[in-house]
Figure 1 (spheres, protein in one colour):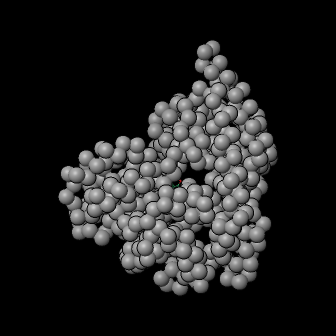
Figure 2 (spheres, rainbow, N blue to C red):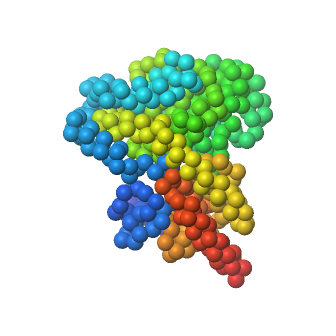
Figure 3 (cartoon, rainbow, N blue to C red):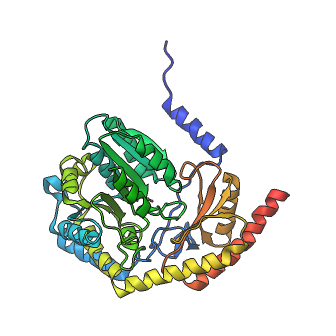
Length: 411
Ligand SMILES: Cc1ncc(COP(=O)(O)O)c(C=O)c1O
C-alpha cells in the first residue's frame, strides 16, 4: 500500500522547525486605531512600527470622508474595474494621482489598485509581456520588497525573461551587465526607499543608466509617496526627475494613511496594463468609499498641514541621528522615517523586542526572510504624530536595552 502524503503533519513539523530557529511569527491583535499609541492585547504600548508616516491613518477628516463615501457609494464595488466596478470616484482619484506625477512623467496616467502587492505584480508582469517570449531581461535590486521579488518571479515564469539581481549601491556592476545585454526589453526594478533599511535608491543614476542602455525603470515608492518632495509627491519630485522611461508605483496604505496603491506611467503603458494586466483585470475593484477617502488624504498631503507633518518627520529624523550615536548596533545611513537597528542574530533581535515590549514599546523584531540572514533588526519608524519627547524617551529606553542585550551576550 502506498503511504499517503500527510500534509497536515508536514505543516505541523515545519511550524515547529520555524519555532526552533526563532523564525516563527506571531499575530498580535490591536483594539485601537493605528496611531502612536496602540492597545495591544489589553496593554497600551507606544508604537514605533507602523508605516503611517504622516499620522493620517486616524485623521478625523479622512475618517469623515470615508463615511461620506460609504453613504454615497455604499460599501462594495461589486465587480472588477472592467466589468462594472469602476466608479466616478475611482476615476477622480486616478486623475489626482496622475496630476501628482505629471511634472515627472510625460502623459502621466494612473491606475488604482487595492494593494501595492497587486500593483507590483501587475506592473512587472504586464511590462514584461510587451516583449516576445524569452526576449526580456529584468534587473532587480537585491533588497527589493517581497512584492517586487514575486512580481519578477511571476514575470519570468510567464515570459521566460532572464532575471539578474543587482546591488543598488554598486551601479558599475549593473552597467557591466547591461553592456552585454542584447535583449529586446530591459527592465530595471527597484524600491524607491528600501523598506527595511530606509535608504533611498540612487534613482537619478539608475535613470541615467536606463537611458544609456535603453531600459525601462520601475520604481516602487511605497515608502516615499507622501513623505518625500516638498509637496509629498514622492521620490521623483525629491530627485527632480522627468522621464518617459519610468513606471512609478505608490502605495496608499502607508503615508497616505488609508489603503491601496497605484501605478503611474505614460498613458500607453497604463492602457496596456488595463488590457493585459491579469492581477488588475481579475480582481474586484476597491470599494469606492476608499477612493473617496483617499481624495481627502491627497488634499492633506499637498496642503500646509502635509508640509508641517513632513517637517515634523525631519525634526524626528535629525534628533535620531544626533542622539543615537551612543549605539554600537549597526545603523543604515537613512534620511527617511525608517531607521533600523541591525542586531544580527534572531535571538538578540527577539530579546530586544521583548525588552522593549516590557518597557511599553511596540517595535517587533524583523527576521529572515524579510531581511537577509544575519541581519535581524529592530525596524523603528516615525510618525508625524510622535512628539520630540516621545522619541527622546524611546532613545533613553533603547540605551538601557542595548546594555541589557550586550550584558546577556557577555554573561
Ligand atoms: C516597498 C513595498 N512595496 C510594496 C508593498 C506592498 O504594499 P501593500 O501593503 O499596499 O500591498 C510594501 C508593503 O509593505 C512595501 O514595503
